[in-house]
Image 1 (cartoon, helix red, strand yellow):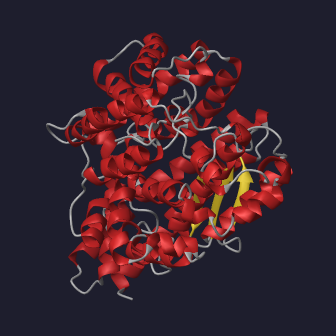
Image 2: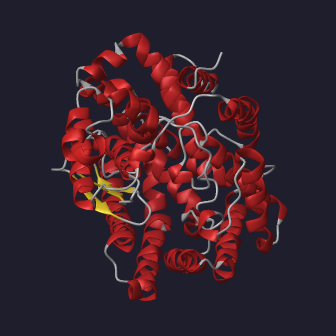
Length: 498
C-alpha cells in the first residue's frame, strides 16, 4: 500500500470507528433503549458527533487527503476512497462545530419527542422541536449550497446525487399524470378483491417464524445479520459482516411480512458490499434511491409476484392453517396486490405508494422554500391526501406525525423512495432480457437474481452513482417510463382493465 494512502487510512479508521459507535446508538435508540434514556444518551451522541467532526475536519485529515490527491500511483479503489473522504470533509468543514454538536443532540432528542407526540396525537407538542430541526437543516444547507443552487437542491443532493428539484418535478409530474387517472379507473372498476383473510388470527410468535423464514429465503445471512423489532422498521449496518434489520408485528399479517422482505432487501445490499471497500467511506450503498430500489425490488417486484410464492406458499398455509388452508394461491396473490388508497405510507399498496411520496415532496418544498407556518402543515397534508388519494386523516398519527424522518432532519430523503421504485423497474425490465426471471422464482432459484444484483449493483458501494449503475447495467440513463409501464401492465391485468 502506498505510504501516503496508508497515512490517510489510519485517520479514516478512527473516523469509521466513531461513525460505527453512532450507528450503534441509533440502533439501540430504536430497539432496546429505555424510555427515560433519551436526553442523557443524546449528550453522549453529541460528544461522539463532535469528535467525529473534529477528526474529519482537522488539519491532519486535510493534509492527508491533499497528499493523496497528488499521488499518481493510487489504484481505482484508493482514488474512490480519497474522493469520498474529500466530499465528507467538505460537507462538514463549512459548519461550525458548536452548531454541529447542538444539532446532533437535538436530533437524538427529537425522535423521542416525535414518538410521544404521535402516541398522544399532539402535533402542537412536536411543532417547536420540528421548527428547531428545520432551522438547523436550512442553516446547514445554506453553508453547503453552491452559487445559484436552491436550498432544497442541496438537501436532495445529500441523498441522491445528480437529482435536483427540476428533474424531480418532471418525474413526479409524470407520476401524477399517469398514476392518478389509473387509480381512478381501478377504483371505478367492477373487479373486487377480498383481502379480509389477511387480518386477524395471526399470532405474533408465528409471524416471527415467518419473518425469519422469509429473510433467510431471500438470502439474508443470519451469521452476519440480526432481525429485531422496532416501531418503525429500518435497516442499519456497521459493515458488511454486521447488518441489522427490524420489523414490527401487527394484526394485519402481510404488513410485517412485507416489511421483513423490504428490510432484507436493504440488508442484502449492505451484505453484498465488497470486502475490499467495507469500513471505508465508499463501503455502503451508493444512495438512498438505489437502496430503496433494492428493498422495493425484493418487496414488490419479487415478493408480490405469484411466481415467488409458488415454491413456498405451502409453508405459509402450514404455519397459518386456520386462516389460509382454504385460500388458493391465486386468491392470496390478488389480496397482497390489492389497490386501496389509505392514509399510511408504510401500509400503502404498490400502485399508490409513490403518490404518498409525491405529497411529502410537495410539502417539503413548501417547508424549505416558502417558510410556511408549521401550524398549517396538518391541514395542507390532509388536503393533499384528499386530492390525490381520496382519503383524509382524522388523527395526527395518520397524517403529519406518521413518519419519523423529519424528526431525524431527513429533508430531501423522501423522494428517494419513489426514485427507488423507478430504478428497480428499470433494472427489472433489463434483467428479464438476461434471464428467465419468473422461471427462477417459480423454481426457488432466487439466488441467481440476488447474485446478479450483487455483481452489478451491490458490490460497488459508493464507487458508482445511481445513474452510473443504471447506465452500466441497462445501457441507458434514468428512465421513469419503465416504472409507469410496470404499474400499468401489472394493475390493468389484475383489475381486468382494457
